[in-house]
Image (cartoon, rainbow, N blue to C red; front, top):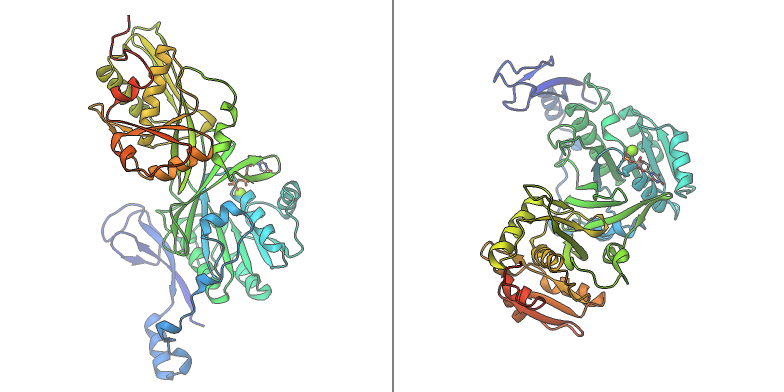
Length: 468
Ligand code: TYD
Ligand code: MG
């Protein structure tokens, strides 16, 4: 076994020093010296191996054709929304980073996944460096996560964790969280860049050699980065970010990197009293409150994409006479700047008088969306509120609105329309070109509009006449 020591290396110029310091003596950069583990005398170590000529030193070479495709052996976690992200299930030796802000539900989700994986008797080791065994077990009781082969370890010392993995040979391990671990050969504090990276590399090494699947949890700081400049992302196989939609209820897990699965997927969960519940049909979730309410001015339905899944969204607009010298505009769940541009387009191309109105735009159900496909729905919802004329309840609106008042095509039109048809909508308004190209769906009539004026003209009479 080679002797190890720790050094500090500048992340800018590569200069190394046995001592940690604020400024690199070589390139003068600040806060770039990061601790890492190296062999005490690498040159000697190599010479010794060469001299010994030991067969054990020969690197394994295998025919490419004979390399087993490990992605064929997938084990579903039993949590469908997580499996969707994993591309069907966990691959042996796969190391996944589950990152998110504190309190989002990382520990809850992974405890549920650990219990589900352990249910058929697989040995799963849940390592918690943040909570006591009592805290973890009381949470497990609360969410009904009880499995005979789910083991718990409250530990932050990496060497003890690796030894436990070696001894107990778990099928999978959850590390909660990477920021609490401390590497025995490093002097820096847990959570520092060097600690996080070295600990993660050790876990990856152990997972790869033992075939254990590992989920590593990590907190992201306020500015959205993991402790250290995304140091972990290239070390692990998969990176999932867990974040809340505007309403605290909804949690979305997104794949940022995925060596064994898709990166355009999203898993949607709802935080309940008894842990996270999957939301397999988000459209129904977001539209639930709006059903059976009857036609209302200011409402327009559109379809956005959440990962590869189309989701119906209800745009709500309110245009009321202003009492302020400068009319108010607010947007909830949608980019305010985008709304301002759309209001300007409405004024210019439909001659709507919005300068004397406060305008509020919101997405129902607490969804947060950045998707130009909603433009047309936003515009028509505002016009509908202003005119106090409801749009047909059974219609969806899909299209990007340009500054010149044109309505443009959006990606995945057919996918989106299929979702609308499935939910019982019978009419769709799209860009003229999209309406021509899209294949017909039974029960869904499609109208094309070249521009905003044409689209509005379908529903409001004399739309280009200035209001009083
Ligand atoms: P947690 O999984 O501890 O978050 P993280 O590990 O990402 O920091 O979840 C914390 C929040 O979730 C906490 O505010 C309480 C809430 N929660 C519920 O609402 N229901 C539950 O069943 C559980 C276990 C937690
Ligand atoms: Mg936690």
